[in-house]
Structures are given as structure tokens and as C-alpha cells.
Image (tube, rainbow, N blue to C red; front, side, top):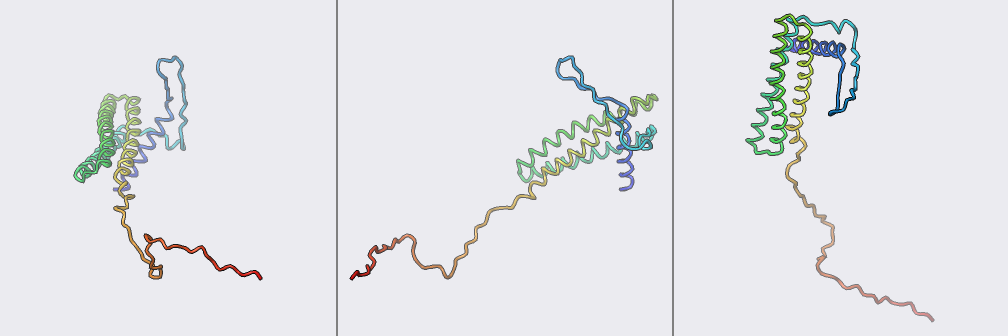
Length: 193
């Protein structure tokens, strides 16, 4: 099972490298007419940049959607547990992560459907684009799962209620600190003869 997941991960990573090497990222701020263009350089050897077959893309996308669905399910269970335990801080944190997970799950399912449609139509450019987006969303799910684990993991740092232990030194003086003992200021003076 882990070998298969490793293969899927390598396939998604290769697709991200291919997609990143093919395109440019364009960002435009507000209504300004200036455009910043950042060229994305391909990484790795040329063997890693090979395009996946449509069947391999479909299989990898299906696995990514299955992993995303499982991740959202686990976060939902953790949220229900936090609500049962009435842990408001953990519930709030998990609710935020689950909302993001659910929105991204809808997106990755739409992208998978669009990719499968593009494969059926023979549009390799569009299918490769959708596959690249699925790879990016898959990475987003991994980050959301880590963030959700941090929400749950906060109780690892909770040390519990503070306990006070008293230790009495048996050799301490038995004086009552509430009673002030007068100190005499008269001291015998040496006689000067």
C-alpha cells in the first residue's frame, strides 16, 4: 500500500514539476495596469519532466480526491470529538480547518471532473492544466491536515491543574512570625579608664 502511495506521490510531484516548467505566473494588483511576470524554471532531470499518460493522470487524480475525502472525514471526526468534550478552542480551530477542507474538496472534485472531460475530448493541454491544479490542491490538503493536527495537538502541552506541595523544614525555628520580639538596643559599653 505504501509503495502505491509513494508512486502516486511521485507521479503528482512529477506533474507539478512539468506544469511549473511549462507556464508563467502572472500577478496583477488591483486596477493598476502594471503586470509582474515571474518565470517558473523546471526542476529536476529531464526524465522527471515527462508527461503522464491520460490514464495515469486520471488514476493519480482519483487517488488525490480519495486522500482529500479521507482527510476531511478525519477532521470532521476530530471536530465532533472536540464538541463532545466541549473544548471550544479546539472546536473553533478545527471548524476553521474543516471549512477550508470542505471548500477545497469541492474544488478538487470539480477539477477532477474537468480533467476527465478534457481527457475524453483529447484536450491534453487542458487535462495537464487540471492535473497540475489537482496536484497543488493535494498539497493544500496536506497543509490543512498538518494544521488540523496542530489544533488537536495543543492538549499535549496542557500540563493539567496546578498542584501545590508544601515541605516543612524540621529544623526551622519555631517562632511565630505574627509576634514581634523586641530587640534591645542597649549594649554594654566598654569602660574607658
